Length: 446
Image 1 (tube, rainbow, N blue to C red):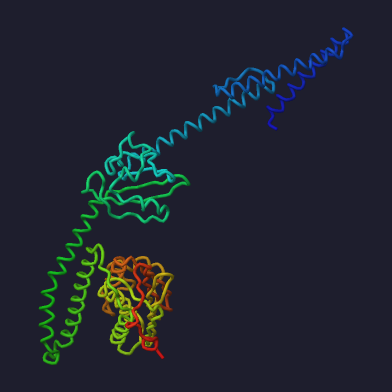
Image 2: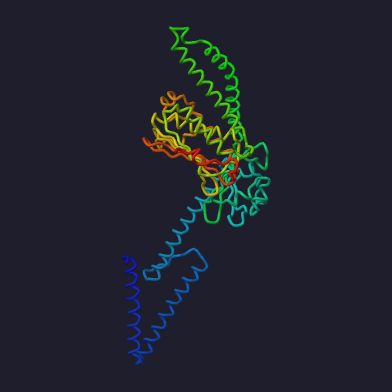
């Protein structure tokens, strides 16, 4: 017990003992000792209850506490309550200042921020940018239904996704259709969501400028490269003994440049596509064609196996899916040393399907995996140049799969090999027609 409390208790007990002793002496003189002690005890009890009542009244009324002079236990309680009240007021002021600071910071953000009740999906608070980008007005839109207020944005199904809701990458602002928004839903508590809307109009414009530039430059390069490559084909190295090796290298590099231009044009076309027409893609003939291409590209340097376990077809673009799968197989052949193994398998995955290409190549360090699908990203520049890769193949695969609502999964271990898997959901698989089915012996090695 602190010293001041011990001193107050001792003084209070000493005062009570002195009062009782004095009452006893007066009672003895008047020959009514018991009555005197009883009256003294009753008086002490009444006084203490009066002090307790005073404390309760102050606490109930939430008044500013005032200390009283003295060194008794009640005086010490007054000082303790006064100190606690002052500390609580100080904490409250700090919390209010912090809340004002956070609110000022949220108000100053260029992004629209809206606090939404998770149960009722009504607006609880929004900053000034929400007025500019989303058209919310204070106080009219406080406690308004968010979905109704932000029409025609498709928010009903999106909000129903909750934590699993994917960001809306491109949506028109309800205020101005010329403003493009990126919407993100953040569940930050058990009862509230945070809706963040960012103006990405300039970014989308710059991205479109970049796409147009790449497409136009690639298109313009195609003709002169075709001319150069044609003239080089007409020149036989045997006719030019001194420059024969240079002609061979020029042919090789012009072919590589032509392939790079074609890949850039393909990527530009895919990026400008919003969706793809769904047709039934016969996977039996697709796998057989992929196997023939891989064997031709390998020229007998690898063991190539193909397994068809799914007995399903896919829904999508036959040309685009063939391009994606062919890119994966070509990469596997390109980056697997002679004598290695390449295994392609098509199988069911829940209600969907997955096509995987596994190789026994060099493997890829884990630090590079997140960036593999970026255009022109290379794990090893020297190895890519030797193999003739353009650095665009996996980017093309990613965009094709995105148009089919599919995803690319990459697993790799250095020195062991890599597995590239294309996962398709139930909406993009079809039962295989009996005429298209083939026996496993035709696609699998004996």
